Length: 107
Image 1 (spheres, one colour):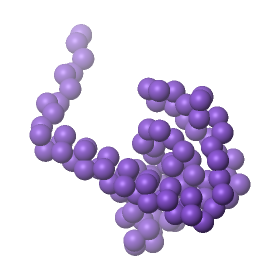
Image 2 (spheres, rainbow, N blue to C red):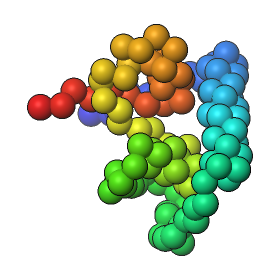
Image 3 (cartoon, rainbow, N blue to C red):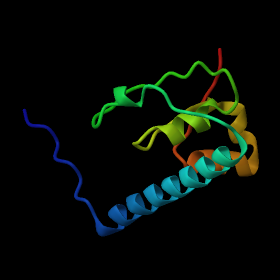
């Protein structure tokens, strides 16, 4: 039994992926700049981040800034879980989805 072949990659899907990556990196840069101007922070343990492949980062969530700091500190794009209620806020929900966050219901 053979595995189904991957769907053909179209130039449109490649362009969409590149645009999404550019959007993500742009916001990451803006957030980094704002945090750098407003807050003193440093990253520890970046040497443990794998250069390739999937991995999980678990923040201790000491502050509401943790998801932003984790995203800014990682070399690779990341996807974050966020409380489902946040996605009900019109602008915030759209932005969270656009940067790769996904809703999680508690309980």
